[in-house]
Structures are given as structure tokens and as C-alpha cells.
Image 1 (cartoon, rainbow, N blue to C red):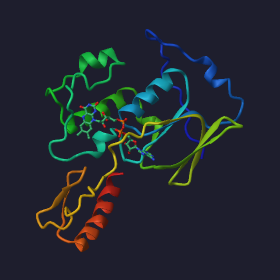
Image 2 (image 1 turned 90 degrees about the vertical axis):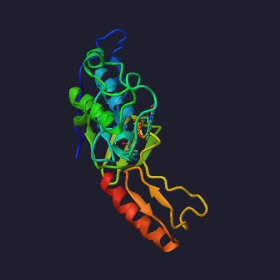
Image 3 (image 1 turned 135 degrees about the vertical axis):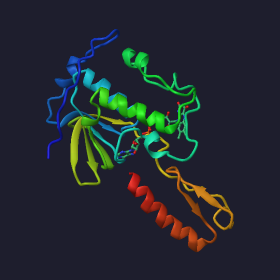
Image 4 (image 1 turned 30 degrees about the vertical axis):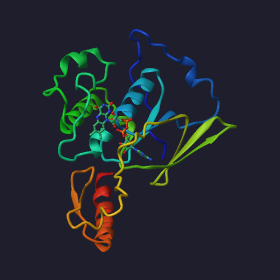
Length: 218
Ligand SMILES: Cc1cc2nc3c(=O)[nH]c(=O)nc-3n(C[C@H](O)[C@H](O)[C@H](O)COP(=O)(O)OP(=O)(O)OC[C@H]3O[C@@H](n4cnc5c(N)ncnc54)[C@H](O)[C@@H]3O)c2cc1C
């Protein structure tokens, strides 16, 4: 199936440098100009910016929604540690004026709501295929194209491939000697669930539970 080809708003703001060549320099067949992997803060902005340059974009996100870090990390107390007003996009001046943070250091919930709002405001979700994990990216020197393949078996070719995959979206079980054997040990996962671990046996049961819980969020 050929992915949707979309070209979004034209970037006519200050400093805009529409790259008109981008759709013509490459004479080889491709599905889209650019593939963006990840729908977190970086991936959302990448889609916005690429579309603004008149490029067709297709995004892949393994999770069910936008937000990246803020979609995955739902543990109690998760919040940003720079001031919310600085932890915001600056490309949309009206948004900057309209959006009001309720706290100086916003919670995960509020940051996720903000990113969902930005995605809706700029129609960024439409670029993404959710619940789809990229499993390989191969660059062909001759054609100058990336072939991006997903866990659904689909492949998309593109001139550019942007890895907006972040670093904090996968559960990382701490490999600390003794932590698994301690009766008091509880591991808080990124999604806020805790795993009591009293033995190696329960650790592997936990692993299985972890895998099942994680897969629901990916
Ligand atoms: C509690 C907490 C507080 C933080 N506070 C701050 C702060 O105050 N200031 C700051 O600058 N940063 C902070 N960070 C760091 C935060 O991760 C980044 O600011 C930012 O959210 C990263 O965005 P990203 O889009 O680059 O990556 P991510 O948000 O990690 O998004 C990457 C996305 O790529 C997807 N993905 C990955 N691999 C694949 C694949 N193979 N196929 C498909 N999809 C894939 C993931 O599912 C994920 O949704 C904080 C992080 C946490 C957890």
C-alpha cells in the first residue's frame, strides 16, 4: 500500500527558506520525500517543518499516540525539570501566547495534553501510522533512497529518514545485583506500575508481565 502523500502548510514566516529543489533533485521513484520515525516532541516538529517546506512526509510511531517520552512515562510524579514555559515549542507564536501552563514545572499529564493539542492544531497526527514499529532502515547509495520497513511488513521509500526516536521511551529494568532478590524490592516501571520481586522465579514472571504491560503501551 502506498502511504499517504501530504504536503502541509507553506512556511512563509521569518527565516523561512523553502527548499524547492528538494522534490526535483532526485529522479528516482520514491513513496514520500521523508520518513519520520517517532511522534514525540522531535518527530512532531520534524513533520511540521518538513511539510512547511512543501515535502511529503510519512511518520511511524510504535505507540498508540503522540507524545513520545510523555506518552510512555506515566509514573507518579513524572514532570519536566526545566520550567514549563521553556519546555514548549517556539515555532508558533500564537500558541505560545494562548497556552497557559498551570504549574511552573508541568506534570506528565499536562505536557502530554499540550503535545496532543499541538498535534491537533497543526494536523500532525495525519502524517503518522501508529502502533507500527520500524524494524529496519536501509540506504541505497545508487538510488539515494532509504527503504524503511516496519513490523507489519510494509516498506516505504524516502529520500530522507529522520530518526526522532528519543532515548527514554523503552522500559529499562535496572541490572543491580540483589535488587531482584530483595523481598522489599519493587521496580517502578515507566508506565507507573510496580513489580514486587522476591526471587529469580518471580523476576522472570515479572519480566513476562512487564512485556505484556509494555506491549499495551507500545
Ligand atoms: C520525567 C522526565 C522529565 C524530563 N524533563 C525534561 C526537561 O525538563 N527538559 C528536557 O529538555 N527534557 C526532559 N526530558 C527528556 C525528554 O525525553 C525530552 O525532552 C523529549 O521529550 C524527547 O523527545 P523526542 O521526540 O526526541 O523523543 P521521545 O519523546 O523519546 O520520542 C521518541 C518516540 O519514538 C518512538 N520510537 C522509538 N523507536 C521506534 C521505532 N523503531 N519505530 C517506531 N517508533 C519508534 C517511541 O515510541 C517514542 O514515542 C524528560 C524526560 C522524562 C522522562
